[in-house]
Amino acid sequence: MTRSISVNGAAHPLPNDPRVSLLDFLRDGLRLTGTKKGCDHGQCGACTVIVNGIRINSCLTLAAMHEDDEVTTIEGLGTPDAPSPLQQAFLEHDGFQCGYCTPGQICSATALLDEIASNWPSDASGDLVGTLTLSDEEIRERMSGNLCRCGAYANIVAAIRDVAEQRT
Amino acid sequence: MRAFDYIRPVSLEEAGRRLAETSAKAIAGGTNLLDLMKLQVETPSAVCDISRLDLATIADTPDGGLFIGALVTNTQTAVHQRVRKDYPLLARAILAGATQQLRNKATTGGNLCQRTRCFYFTNADQPCNKRDPGSGCGAIGGIAKLHAVLGTSEHCIATYPGDMAVAMTALGGVVEIVGADGHARSVPVADFHCLPGDTPWRENVLEEGDIITAVTLPAPVGGLQTYRKVRERSSYAFALVSVAAIVAMDDQGKIARADLAFGGLAHKPWHDPRIGDLLVGEAPSAALFDKAADLLLETAQGYGENDFKIPLARRTLRAVLEEVTGASS
Ligand SMILES: Cc1cc2nc3c(=O)[nH]c(=O)nc-3n(C[C@H](O)[C@H](O)[C@H](O)COP(=O)(O)OP(=O)(O)OC[C@H]3O[C@@H](n4cnc5c(N)ncnc54)[C@H](O)[C@@H]3O)c2cc1C
Ligand code: SF4
Ligand code: FES
Ligand code: FES
Image 1 (tube, helix red, strand yellow):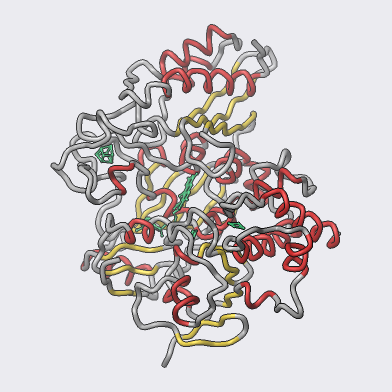
Image 2 (cartoon, rainbow over the protein chains, first blue to last red):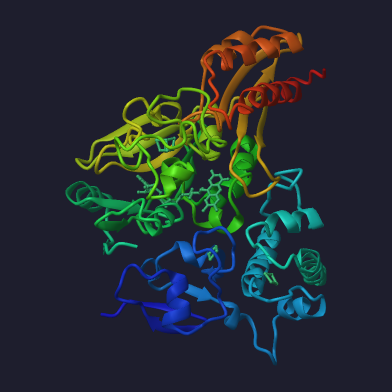
């Protein structure tokens, strides 16, 4: 029986070598090179993907540990012809320069919007039990796991704020 | 990464047996173990994937406390309604650590067992008694900004880097452990981690084959809770010094209860019950808070780069006590 993993809705057999990280499996195994490798140590967020609805660093997890999990990568969020609202907003707000961190930023921000909808607090939330309001400070804290060497932060925050406001 | 076997036990019993009979390491979220395996600091012959065992529940205990399973993620704990309402200190400590992506994977058990961030420990070509017993301690006389000022030894001055366990220590949490023989035991979080002494490689009380199954918190005690983490940038950095505090005042304006724990100062969340004893029954004042800091730092010793932690701990403790007692100075 082959063990499999679902990526962007399609099932794939898991690699045989247990050393393969989820990140290397996506990039080298499936040739889904949108997901980027920055540090390979959980520090930069370039490798962020969404697994079963939750954002994680794909560099710090083994592909073998994800049998039957549902993974969404940047390729699964939208296409050049039909971009997701956040992909479109990153274009409109110039939310990048070189673009290397961008797939991770967008996957992270996609999950962030769901976390806000679930009223999950962050370190920037003044109140742990009330209803959240999504200030720029909240967006910055929640995106702190995604570094951008080009420093496009201001426009990244603007893109996320834009989509968050459309949602409410 | 060195080659290893991947084992996925179907039960706690099987996991304990596999861990005891091979030089396997348990893997839960993987965010610390895999990081260190890539650096060849950890080189297990097998990883034992416990992530699908039935240890992911969070539930009320009969005495009004809270049971947090070993595989509950840090995010699940921090967003849990009862944690936000009754143990805000714990939610705050978790939210002040790492990033959303990491907290989504990090587990209760893995967070307790996370290893030090000492630069010499994580660089396999550097001397380090913790990683390579007898090779010396590079940090003594070297890069030691993150290092301990309390409870150090001539063999190791590393810190336990986590936040969650500092809050759990102040809250009086208890680690639930099952041994390879199926025997269960309970260890207060305050006694779970060890001081380095002359066995710096031993970081906690776990024996081969032991698996953490949960942390239980006692019923909430009331009073104000706070977690103050001082770090080099305001997000996404390990603590230089942190203070977890639960303080209640009586109706005469005196301190009725004070449970404190400290991060960033030692090889374990630092807990000194004498500080609570000193504070209880007294009216808050700057002089009292200074005496509390004197007790905390009685045996403190700096190692050059980390000398700043001693005055920083004093000022952070004072600021926290001012906040939770309502005393201004
Ligand atoms: C960039 C970065 C920044 C970080 N910042 C912070 C921070 O500011 N504050 C903070 O507190 N932490 C921080 N962390 C650390 C993070 O919290 C830990 O990596 C995480 O909590 C480990 O949990 P895990 O489940 O992924 O552990 P794993 O990597 O799966 O395991 C870690 C260790 O615990 C053992 N283990 C796991 N579960 C059990 C169990 N049930 N029983 C027995 N042994 C077990 C494993 O064998 C292993 O030795 C940071 C990490 C990174 C990479
Ligand atoms: S402080 Fe401890 S962990 Fe760091 S080099 Fe010295 S022995 Fe190793
Ligand atoms: S590549 Fe995974 S966090 Fe940097
Ligand atoms: S756009 Fe270049 S790293 Fe972010």
